[in-house]
Length: 236
Length: 240
Image 1 (cartoon, rainbow over the protein chains, first blue to last red):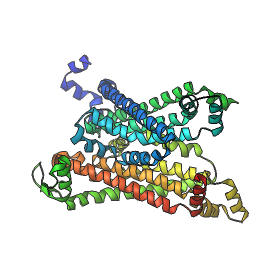
Image 2: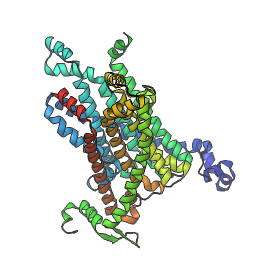
Image 3: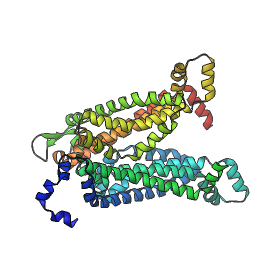
Image 4: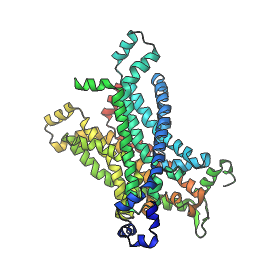
């Protein structure tokens, strides 16, 4: 890095890669030299995604478990989270600005609001799909409602819950590229900073796609680890 | 106007911006007012409509056909997963950097964005049709094309419209960042805040949010109205 700075302006201009940059082209050399600038935004992006999905999961999982027993809650919760889901995140960031100011809090509120519906719906579907016979067997073994929920219903709903989590994570990575509008940084800020420069767009956009794939894969691995019986059933 | 809305604070100013013109903070022309909001909304709607029309023209026939021959499920299902993993901003930036700015380049990006949900839903809708129903249609002497048009399409319509609804809301939302690709839409006050000021930006955010909700609600109503009566009866029986 320091040697690059020491080269001075004139020499860089004569460098063949410089014409590539002037053309806004795709320049592997430029990417190799400037990769540093994407590291911080990348981790801001990871932070926004993970924290938003974690909070969103905590809220919507709780709501789904409550609504599972008290069915009348399903419609109002679906309608309210449905509206939150429909409001475009760019608009949500600016609607929140006068209330919560610029920064990560604003971005996180908008991102959390967006994932609620996705996770709520999947958790509820998962719980509803647990076979009645299985629940009866659990009750017959003397499980209380609470034990039945945590030992039978939630584990059996895990594939659907995890599917919802995967959708939520990939969607949030995408929406977090707009979080820079709320002053929360992330890879979108880099894309926006020089949208005509191919190298920049490919690296910043590519990192976002990579992050989505990575988190998606991690959840899939986690799901396999905590639901070993699904594999046993498939093998039979 | 501004005094009656004063209790709403910044939001009052923003609502005032929608209805009344004011000098631009950057100097020069007047900004705001219903006429200008309409000037911004018209291209927003047009861009969304053109993109959705092209996306539907491609993905509905493709989804119906793949579903009819029961092939290409991997493509049809995974299109949605891949589509979701590519951030809309990255997609548009990619088109701007490699193809340049302009209405049709942006339309192409929005079409790519809109295709996956419609394709996946059209495919799923057709494959979900009861095989017995298709068999009896064939037994009545219907040709392949007739089966698609008279049996599979009507029964898949609710899901297809569900896909259109998802895509349309997404496209309307994404058209907000269209000014990055050189197309002026309701996102212009959001991107060029120097010209329109803070209240203009908030006003645009409010209008975009309303537009998305209206799109969602009206397409939801349309989805219910295209659901064949038989399917509605079936569902009522299933719930009782």
